[in-house]
Image 1 (spheres, helix red, strand yellow):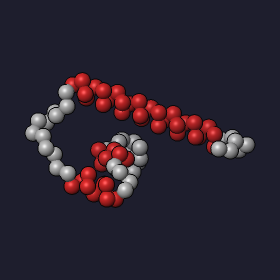
Image 2 (cartoon, helix red, strand yellow; image 1 turned 90 degrees about the horizontal axis):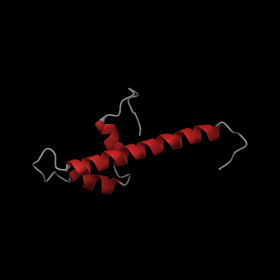
Image 3 (cartoon, rainbow, N blue to C red; image 1 turned 30 degrees about the horizontal axis):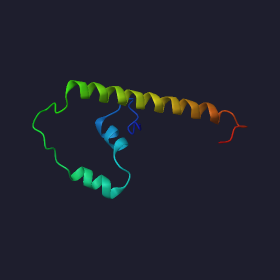
Length: 80
């Protein structure tokens, strides 16, 4: 994820930018979509738990990847 304002917090806009499609046409189509639900909690508690667990695993994996990349950069003899 990218903490654009470097405040140490992940804001919704930063999260949304990180998961938005890079392709401009796809991003525009996604941004034009309107919400079709009225319930402020459209997902079941089970779905929310699964989503939260998945997101935590993704963020943990990204953190591990960043740590591995740092360690590899410190080894000048290692080439990918």
